[in-house]
Length: 293
Length: 325
Ligand code: SF4
Ligand code: SF4
Ligand code: SF4
Ligand code: SF4
Ligand code: FES
Image (cartoon, rainbow over all chains, first blue to last red; front, side, top):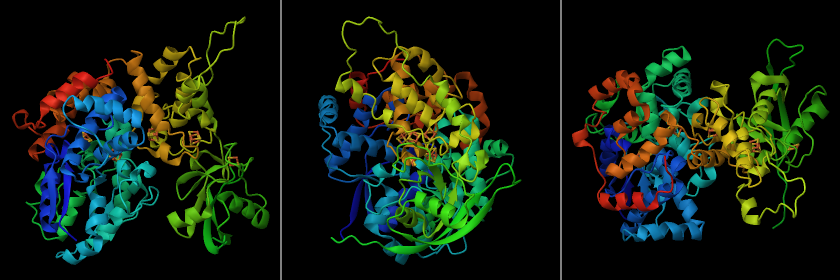
């Protein structure tokens, strides 16, 4: 296998409120010898809100982001579930509608770009599973996480709608009984926690307009993981992370029970197993203290 | 290829409850040999016919048309008559839990009180509201393109699978829910309907309306008819802006704020988005923001990233914008 190389769409969150995710992404890429070419020209994907206001603009902007990955001739890798959904949804719509693609390209032409449909768009989680391989990862583990019960939190926008999501990676995932994160936990030597909320929503996208709903969903998720005996949680999405890590106060109030668990990005979990230091993984940036590493 | 029928043993854990007699629900276990040809409804039938004649569930057409047989298997809302057991075993293994769509609304075993579903359905005026010329000169023709605008919203069989899978329904009892939204879209998109703004105004209201959807995609995932309710909710959002119904509130400003932020720096300015959305109400976010600040999770304005080739983005925002607020 040659060296793996991807175009990295960081999204906005990794560059702002979850700096630890950016740090740990780069740290494990180095350990795994994966080359990530950052798409510094990319804009925000609209986070599943822009299209509510202006669908066409959202398509054009996302198509532009993908066009830059195409220019590199690389698969685009995302590190945020919602970036993944928005980008993959754009790709799906353009690849299946020649007329829409032509209209979008008419705009991109104004800035000298073209969307061709030649680059895949996949979440880093699946790139690791499909291309790097969990067996190989397992061999590289130097600090197995065997003393930990780890609750996977998948996040909606990486698993639903499954028809679309399964177009973006090779290893099939069932949205009702997903396994990718569980498999990753096991590859890192940890024990997985099975709990009802692992494939449910954390409420992030209505945090401003429906704070109670958002807080209850977050509270339920942390409570479910706690009752499943989890030492900590792990997620592939910085938005889920923000919600589960920083909103425990509101969540506890909303469900009438004090809940809080350390939440790691999947990159941090992999990094721990590969022997990265807590500084390399940015563990000091968590609001809910990571007290075990 | 020759068609072969396989059999396997499956353990069913079945929800039982009779509101007239039982104080609490309980689960009954059944071990059965099932064949690769069977659907979940066959199992419900076999429980009733071979084990317990009092076992109750709804079904009628057995062809995915009447919408009565929706239940949950291992938490997944599904039409019993369409769902193959093989697929269920493949997804969940050989221990299957059979439950009604809503345990708290159970009347008898799989049968629930679907009253809340119909109330929400009625609330969005699920019919054409049209000023009909009583003496028309010609037929009221709908072109194929106009019919296509319904985007399959008319395929809904009102099974309730999405309604009882939606996480918001559990928390916010005013929420209309995915099925009602899909139905509302079905009429909003119909060229013969004249109620547009009236219906949209109600869909724009806080708590009950489209802004309270958390975008979890559960409804699209469970729908046996591929109605894609969340896709319809997105279209309703767009209609609210297009028809000028969307009032300035935290939800609408949140959606519009992305366009502003992108036009300014390509990437999102998270802090500015919250400020733009909330206005003075931003003070309520201060306690969490302070915690985030001490952990280095808040990007200072002078460090705020910008996309490279920002001029391209700005040009595209100008040339490709189709909405106004
Ligand atoms: S989803 Fe969030 S992180 Fe991803 S690009 Fe959009 S705003 Fe940025
Ligand atoms: S609400 Fe949470 S779980 Fe759902 S898609 Fe958004 S970040 Fe992911
Ligand atoms: S996407 Fe919205 S309507 Fe659909 S199930 Fe989720 S919260 Fe409910
Ligand atoms: S939208 Fe689909 S899942 Fe929801 S009630 Fe209609 S047919 Fe059933
Ligand atoms: S029995 Fe009619 S839809 Fe299943």
